[in-house]
Amino acid sequence: VGTVADVRDLDAVQAAVDAGVDRFGGLDFAVANAGVGAYGSVLQVDPEAFRTVIDVDLVGVFHTVRATLPAIIERRGYLLLVSSMAAYLPMPGQASYNAAKAGVEQFANTVRLEVARHGVGVGSAHMGWIDTPLIRDARADLPAFDRMLTALPGPLGKVHDVDECAAAFVRALGRRSRRVYVPGPMRTAAWARTLITSAVADRIVLRALAHAPDADGQVAALGRSMSARVAALLTER
Image (tube, rainbow, N blue to C red; front, side):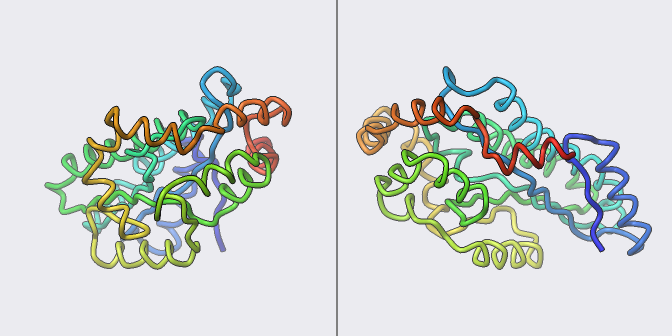
């Protein structure tokens, strides 16, 4: 039986963690995986939606680590913090998500150093497009997002099955991996991040995403900066 908690609420996360520790006697692993996205450029996105993405995707990771860390230290366990290829591959219209996931990666790097003396391992996961409700909502709401995926070169535009991602996470837990990449070629992109954010890369991305301005018009017509499913979940909690 699971325990539900809003990762934006540290007390709620702590209560869920305490329930798990009471039930199982401790924690060996913790995975910070809660995430939402927002629609629209910096000029178009609803500021509240932007703030919500940061609260869930970045502050929520902090809350998860803060709540679980004492129990993880006790077992000399492992934390897996879910970042994304968005940490090093910026995409127009996704500023909040890109910023949050870059923050998660650097947060993981910092926590790793802080808890090394306790024998705790810390990894960050970097995925491409995974076939989750997050991606399906965006494709259903914004035709421009679907065209963007088609325009991206090679593996950067491919959507991968969620089972592939889950299997990679399970392997990471067993190996206490420092980095997890799904699919594997994301590792190359991570190493090439300086090139990816160069002026040359900007020209390639902007050429491939020439339709990007259409997305703001679609967001305006949609009348919201998040999927209806995510908005309903956030309201419920």
